[in-house]
Amino acid sequence: MLLIAGVTGKTDSQGPGATRTCPRCGNTTQWQRLKSYRQFTLFFVLPLWRWGRQEYEQCGVCGQTAAA
Image (cartoon, rainbow, N blue to C red):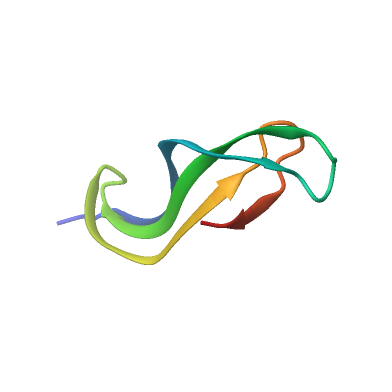
């Protein structure tokens, strides 16, 4: 029997975030809320467990991130 498993990182969009001024690029824009995590998958399709969850917001212009 051959089992193929792997570890992948995944980022999901959680919708629009706050409107703020970016400290890096100086633009005032609506940031995007994101959630990222690592997951162990079976056959690279079936997620078995997730860990390292983080929620943050990202500037839509330059990609700077900040804690949500």
